[in-house]
Image (cartoon, rainbow, N blue to C red; front, side):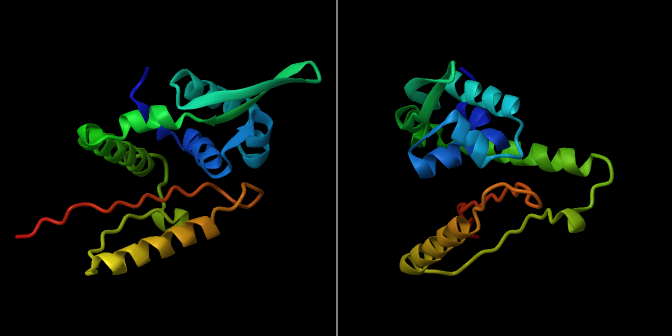
Length: 170
């Protein structure tokens, strides 16, 4: 089994995980329909990787017109096994390195244009008590849900990463 973070942080696999996190279970056909910009063969390849790494599980199978239709769900138990305090520093490092690689590849590729492509990174320190921070997080979650549209013509995937990290006080 590969590093679960590297498996999950792939943009297409992350979209599959997000779909299943909000819908409990889906068939492979439904996943393909919800992500029409991803070729079917690519979707099946990423589903296979998630199954082989035990991030997804098959909850049922049925015959549909001569082929086997699988219904998939997240394997929450397997994901939780890796989401521990013991693994937290490694998980954070893997996440940050993966973000770095994306920026590195973009800025070293042909004709990077962050203004046109709307690529940026930002750091802001907010002064809040716990109740205010909880309210901020609830509103942010609401925005993320509100703008989580289905793939369609004219839309492209936008990878938004949000980190709340420790502040070093001098």
